[in-house]
Image 1 (cartoon, rainbow over the protein chains, first blue to last red):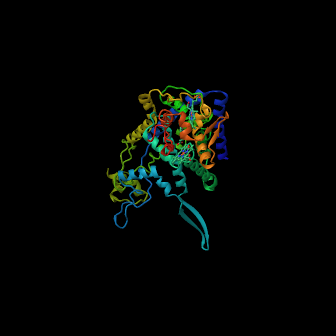
Image 2 (cartoon, each protein chain N blue to C red):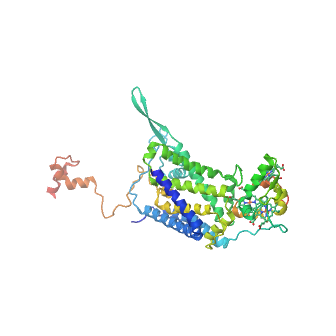
Image 3 (cartoon, rainbow over the protein chains, first blue to last red):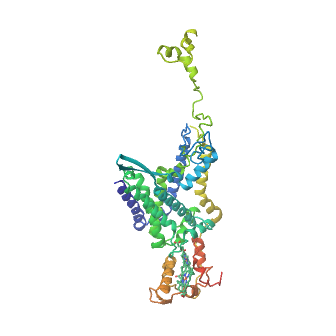
Length: 345
Length: 129
């Protein structure tokens, strides 16, 4: 049901620009006003969320580790530097691997139940599918986003041209098929399929899980449709997009409606982004379980959010304070003298 | 409540927002105003193989079809929608009218950030690269 609602909602979203541009001729609204507003909402929402996270308390060192801590015998038990980082540099490497290679997903395991003569047995095995789908999806998305710079920069910088060349390396058809287009559509479909087919994942999936996937699928398909099927006038579109970045708005007449559908869907994504699970983009950098060195046994950490007016109360002081009451209740005392502490005082 | 790990978070935010806004800065400082490239049109011809709109948007598809028809089906004559016949050839048909690659094809392609690989083998009107 959740998947169906999301799909229907995305269909509705596609209809809005179709009617708005084709029937109502609101090209300026769909070509300039909506994307600019969406971009501003995206930026402000993004900053607001990240600053809000930055202001919340992180009282403890809570890195999650997956390897051997630095031990008394480094020959016998070698420290696992990047799964149990203990210095800033090691943590940095861990973060780089996490962000660029999705290392923690690579360690994903799958539990299964097996009937044996001695009763049921649980088995765990490495499961790399999620990692594969995710990395295909994210890198394709990133490459496609970068390639779009050809529409927003003049002159087109060298790395965008280089990317265009590498992405079209197979030189299939004209316009050349881009590998990242295939990667993105395949990646989304696989992630969607996983959610719908795997019963355990399906059970915990909400509209907020399906909707971004369907939305991104719709964006990808509208882009593919524009480039390979409708073959929109790229030069006219560049005139529009360059108008946006030079604040000199102009909408050429020849642009196909599929472009406005594409832009509207991207605008929806930008508005939705700061308020959704997609905020894992900055979130991965701000995860205290990832970005802190695991050095609690080497260094003394004081909670920076502690109220300085509340002084520490050591056990020795505590026993002095409550000694008589503890003795009366028959509790053991480290220092038997404390039992009569109050009478003396 | 103060931001205890504020410095790296703010630096990260500034980099991210800066990267997203860079096209606006480049647009204002370098490009200023963008105009569609001016193409050098054939002097003594009035019409292209197909309509102007079709050529602007779908010339790559046409070329792709031409290539397949000529080399796979052995069909070397193309009849356009008006019934006029053209020899299927990139160098001898397109480039006979569009006598300069640099002032015509490349103008658009540089702006669109594409570099068709056709000229790895085909010879452009200006001669070999």
